[in-house]
Structures are given as C-alpha cells and as structure tokens.
Length: 301
Image (cartoon, rainbow, N blue to C red; front, side, top):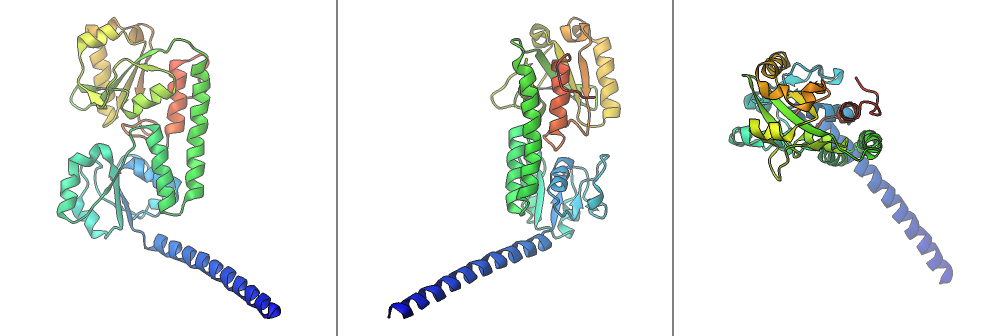
C-alpha cells in the first residue's frame, strides 16, 4: 500500500506541474492574442509617446506637427487633439481610445453619441505619468518596458532634487501659458509645468488647491516679484512666442519684475514641454533645473 501511495503522489505531482505549465502557456498565448487583436487609437501626442515607449500597436494617431514615430507611419490620422474626428475613430473599430483628462469635458459627449467610451489618462503631474505608464504596461503585457521608462524618469528626478537640496532659498517662479490671440493664463502648482518646477526645487508664486490654470492679475504678478518666468507656448508657438515678446515689451509691468531685469525669462516649446506630462519629462526636468540653478543645474539646452 505504501508503495502504491507513493506512486500516486508522484503521479499527482507530475499532473499538477504539467497543468501549471500548461496554464502559464495558455495564459501567454491568450496575452499574445489580446495584443494582436488590440486596435488602439491615441488622440494626443503625449499618448503616442507613451505607446511608442511601450511598443504598443496603434491604428489611429492625432494630426499634429510633431514627428510621429516610424512604427506608426501607416496609422490613420484622426484629427486635432482638441477636436478629433469621432467618425474617423469609429471607422477604425478601436478596442481602446485614449485621450487626457484635461480634454475630457471638451469632447466626451461626442464619443458617447457614437457608443465609444474613451479612456482619459491623467497626465497632470510626473507622478501621474509614472502611474499611467505602469498601469498601461500591466494592461498590455509591457511590464519590462514600463519599468525601464519609469526608471529613467526616477533617475532624472533624483538628479534635480540633489541640486535643489544644496540651496536653502527656492527661486520664485511665474509660469504663463500662452494662447493664440494675444492672451495667456497663469499655470499653478496643480499644472504639469508647475509640478516640474516643484520637483526641480522652485516655488510657484501662484498656488491653487484644485485649478491648473487661473486668469492673470497684474497687481498679483507685480506683488509676487518672480525671479524666473517660464512661458509655455502650448499651441501655435510661431504665433504665441512673438505675442509674448510683444507683450513683455509693451506692458510696463514686466519691466519691473526681477526675472526680466536679470534676463531669466524662458520659452517652453514642444516636444520637451507641453500642457500635459509626456515621455520628455526627464529632459524637461533637467532643463528646468538648469534654469532655476544655472551654476549647478544639469547640462541641458
């Protein structure tokens, strides 16, 4: 009996091991099939960058002046990120459509009318970007690629924090987001660029508990006396940057600010900077660090 029991246990062990391996194999096959069937549409360039870093397939990409990665050369153009073509996206029969939370209110209803439920990624900070990369890596079986991408950002964060730690005083920073039409908004600590400034060791002179952008106030700007001014040309930089330069020359308020007096006014343009976080975050952090602490900041253009 003991011998027969021993044989039975051995046979049972073999069955369990083989079954477990078969399960893993089938799971891998299932994941591979899921990847083959995935028809993903990215409606913003930031999402395209994430997809490219994770080596994800895309059937649709936004119409943009930014250079679309080679792997997506044959993907369909689905229109401007601010106003994508719902009809074009629907025709691609996507399994997933990705945009960003800052555009959710803008065209969420249009998608619902076509029975498409897009995923709005939260890219309002570097931490949210890393979370998004990690969750998409898990969802699409790209964990290795996701860890590498997050590791690169972590390394840049560590570098700029070391620089900032050497300074007791944080420079006062004003962030402006230019809009076509000779207007601009103030970016608070809740915005992506505001988060870059905070990580790099700057103090945003305009803070908010919930708002990413607020309306400008001349008296408040004058009172804040920013030592560094960052001007984000979010859309149409060829128009916005000349607008900023004209504004700073014509409006006397700017001539009295310490940032202008010390020539510490910088223009932020794509692809390194945008209104939402993207895969250029590591480079952006180093550039901002160099602007805040020019003698000790990381080497950046």
